[in-house]
Structures are given as C-alpha cells and as structure tokens.
Amino acid sequence: MITTENNTDYIQANVFGEMTLQDYQELEQAIDEELRISRRIKLLLDLTMMSGFTLDVAWEDIKFISNHAHDFQRIAIVTQNQWLSWAGWINGAFTDAEISIFADAEEALTWMESD
Image (tube, rainbow, N blue to C red; front, side, top):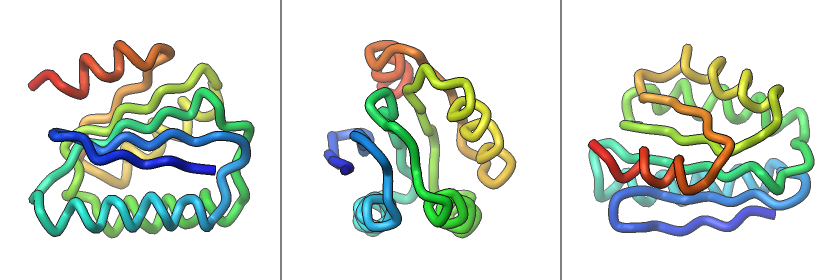
C-alpha cells in the first residue's frame, strides 16, 4: 500500500508492506500531476515500513526515472535497508536530481525543505 501527500514544496510517499505495480503507478500519477504545475519537483520516499516490492516495480522505476531524468530537483529516500539504499544510488545514474538516503524521516524532511 502507498500513500501520497502533496506538500507545499514536495511530494511525500509512504509505502507499507509490499509495493506493487499498482502502488507505483499511483506514485507516478501523483508525480505527473505535480509536474503539470511545477517544472522540477522534490520527492520524499519513506520506505521504512516497506517489506519488499515486486519485480515489475523495479523495472517500472527504472523506466519512469529515465523518462523524467530532468524533472526532479531532490529525492530523499528514508530506509534502514542496505539493499534499498543501493537501489537509490543506482537510480542516481538515471537522473540529475540530488539523491540522499536517510535512516530518519526528520533528517530527510529537514534536507528536503532546505535549499
């Protein structure tokens, strides 16, 4: 399950349990809607409650990030899972966004709101 929230300066997404393709497509829709308003966006992904993801999500993520390589200003990923940290850094190869990995959501939020 995924929840998305459009804040004044960024989109926050929280994933609970296993992330499915339908969840990821919901995130894509929220991002696309924000891109109609803003030229570049910030994204905070809280994955601390995520138990895993389906293989089609990994492929969709690579395609989506590649298609939006210049649309993100910052991406903050909150996780304590080393594998997800590595995946976040791999995504950095497909975008010019600043990407940072955080173990704590408050630190991620502070970074997200700073310029």
